[in-house]
Length: 174
Image 1 (cartoon, rainbow, N blue to C red):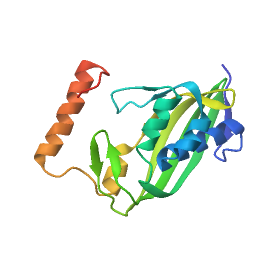
Image 2: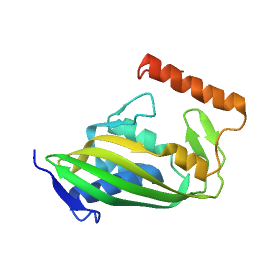
Image 3: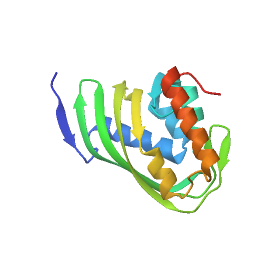
């Protein structure tokens, strides 16, 4: 299978699509996200227990970032295309101006800036994202925003949740 190195400029339409997708997600742009994904799009995120399936569900997940970040900038640093897939290394940055929603918790804004790397593979169909495997430095964001949970109890709950998730597969851990 041939690959094509398309550089870091996002000059190709698929690379521009990936950049727009990531920007909409981080910025919480639900309207933009709805225009960027197919009806049956699947979003795979390895640090979260469930895949998100379908345009409506992905838009709803994106809503979780709505109002959380300002000055969002996503830059595709390097990308490679192979068939209908684009692999992209990107950097996302922004400033935390509103509460962040993580599942049923709300984390107060800090006003701090973040800049984190992320990597993904995106399947493109008819000019939209049809499937995405995204790995972002979520811990890096939390550290830079100074939003790490406080106290040993909070850290123990996070460690237990991760252990249960890894031992029990990708089912929801409610």
